[in-house]
Length: 385
Image (cartoon, rainbow, N blue to C red; front, side, top):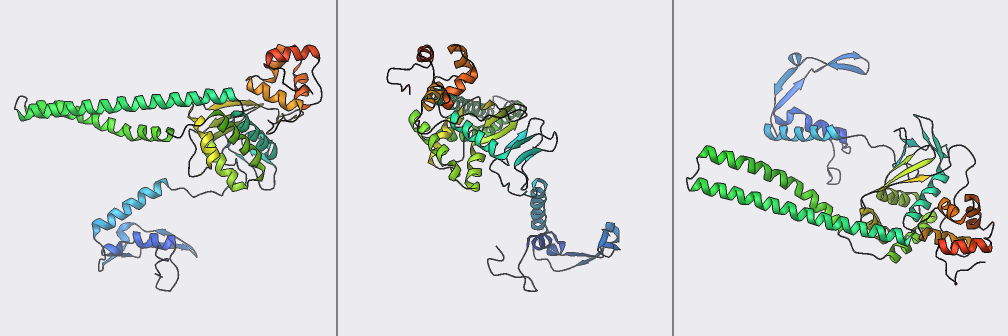
C-alpha cells in the first residue's frame, strides 16, 4: 500500500516487509529510543545485551504509547500463527496425498512417482492420477448410487434445519428466563444475591448457545444449494471425466483441492475422503452440481488397487459414449451396483472371465447370457455383439 501510494524510503527505495516491521516495532515511535543494544561477536554476528546495559534517550513521539502497544500486540498474535508458505506442488494431488504410515507423499520434479520418505512407499504419478480420475467418475457414475447420495444429502439438510430450529428455541427460552429473573428483581421479590444466582448461569448458557449458532447457520447455508437431478449429475461427471486430460495443472489442482479432502495410499488399497462441500468460487457449474452429493455422512471410500508389487492391470474406465459390448456390460454392472467378483460368483465364472467380457477379449456363451440377463436386468434390446 505504501509503494502503491507513491511513498519511498529516505534513500528513495521501495518499502519491503522487513523494513515496515522494523518501523512498526521501533519504540522511537512512542517517544523512547534505545541504542547500544547488541554486542558484536563476529564479522556478521552479534548478541543482544541485557536490558540494563542499553542506552536510552527520549525523543518526540509520533503516536501514543497505547496505540503503539496495541499495534505490537496485533503483530505478535499474527506471527504466532504465521508459517512460511511452501512451494506450490507441480502435481494436482500434491496437497492431498498421504501415506498410510502417516507421512506425506511427494513427487520430485525429477521423479515420475509419489514417494513417502518415512516408509519408502512409491506410486507412479500418471497411474495414480488416472486411477483417481476413474474413481471420481465412478463415484458419480451409477444412477442408483447418485440417487442414494442425493437422498442422504437431503436428509442431512433436513436434520440440520431441525437442529438449528431447536437451538433457536433454546436461545429464546433462556432469554425468557433471564427476563423473568430480571422482572422478579425489579419487583423486589428476590434479593440481589438471589438475582445473581439465577441470572449469571443463564447468561453463561446464553453465550454458549449464541457461540454455536453461527456455525450451524453457516453449515445450513452451505447445504442449501439448488436441487439437481440424477441425469444432470451423471452428465456433468462424464463431462468432467472427458475434459480432464485437456485441463491445465492449476485447474486440476483447484478441482482436486475442492473435491478431495485426503487421499491415503496403503498396501493394496487407497482410502479417499471427499470434502464436505466444494467452494463455489473455485469450481465451475459441473462441480457445483456434483458437490451436492458430498453432503453425505460417510465420505470415505476404500479403493482396492494392485500398484504395490506384481503385474498391474489397469481397470477399464467408464466409457463416456459406450460403443462395444464390453462398454455396455460395464455400464449395466455399475447401474446394478455390483463388482466384478460379485458378477462372477452369480454367473458361475471366474473374475478373469468377467474382466475379459468387459475388455472385449471374449464374449459370453448362451448360458452365460441367460445368467447375465437375470443378474444385470438385461432386456431384449440389449446389444449382444
